[in-house]
Image (cartoon, rainbow, N blue to C red; front, side, top):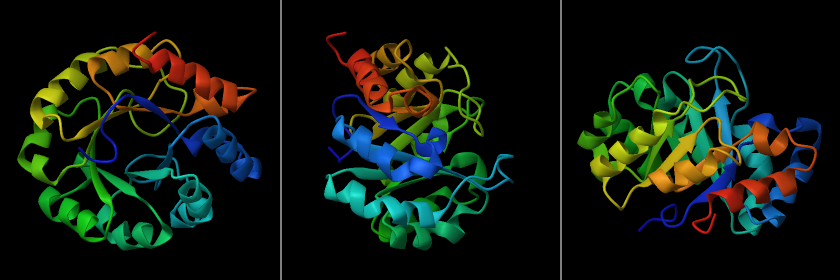
Length: 226
């Protein structure tokens, strides 16, 4: 079992945070119980928007790590190999690359692990989950996108629930499954029941008036008792 497997938990995504109050907002969800902070990195090429880079990871590292939290970095960029060392140096704990953006998956995932991070592989809604199989021994995290990557606030694609179950059959119990996109109090429960252990929630947390309460509500919805 790696540090990401186990019971389902919500990973707030700072993509939807108020960057003028970023530290304050991240601290609020950490104090509410979050132990994984998700950082969406976009380059304007693999996806149209441009978001953030290693400097943001570095700015949050001390705060998150002092709370025993994990910095979960999701690269939606072309040529991610070029950025592995920079994100490792910035303090990333998990680095996830997109299967659609990597030429040599084996080499890239090995490089992530050799840099001291957990290795994740993400797939878009149109990519077959079978792509995880050849590199499963190098995976710590399998990220199943539940929206098309690039923008927050999109509607959860219902077919993702079946893809989560298919992914579990491919990767087995030792690889954590993450779902990213459209997670809120309605979709968190079904995604968790399908087998997702990390539920990325952006606008549903940081787009709310009270991110702390919003985080707790989604976490409650994802719990087995719900």
